[in-house]
Length: 343
Image (cartoon, rainbow, N blue to C red):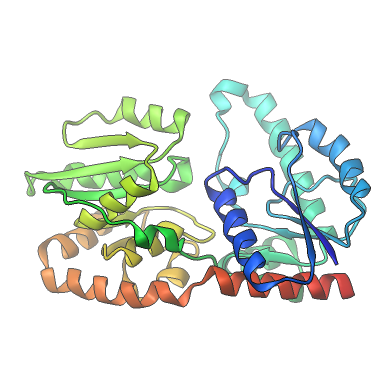
């Protein structure tokens, strides 16, 4: 079988990490099928993607194409499977509406929905990272649940090999982007109240996201809040390992790899109870309502002030993260490929 994987997002952080780990593990488990990593110089979400990509793909004569994101060309007629990581773009304003203007923003959103609807309707199978996303597709879009396969993502084992140094500061850690659904503002507001009784406490925020981080930095300027910007794997491991806790304050997540990374690195996790996070975190997180500022503060304090609670979360986290494996994801994905081609 000739299987083409759209690898244009290979170098990106979120979807790119998924593509990299999938490909790496498919190489280990599948020596029979032919894989083509398809990466033409065509920008995603572009008109060119819709017009030129179908012909380029058809010229390869694949048995199946795997699109690792919803941006499937509407005019592509071959067999394909698609990965839907979340439906967040449908629930929150993800674009810089102030930059594009409301009309352009609405037109783009209309275009995204058309492309998304085409992808989930025509796909042989839909891969999702959680039952939460599966249920959203069933309830919001009327997709037959038999068409949807849950393939849980995992921690990249390479970070476990990094040997970090020591940091002496007492700090809470967050890494990710600062899009509206991430609720970074909610975390910052909770921290500003927390530090009134914890004078030496600091908040370290990391993540590469120009517009939304700049907006937050402008609004929240405090000597105990540190904006690190993009951090390498080595830096993130250092920050996870030495943090008092990692906080995931999101209003919605399709998966939530950072909470598994924190667990794997021995950092206690305090997390929102929204989206897929309880499904992924299990009993290894302390959960709060992201819409309730008092609850956020209460749960963080339980970790800061109770060493037993902190140790218990670390212990459970070191067990929990091992339930997720990229190799298992690759095996499930290969099975989906074979079933889709044979259908």
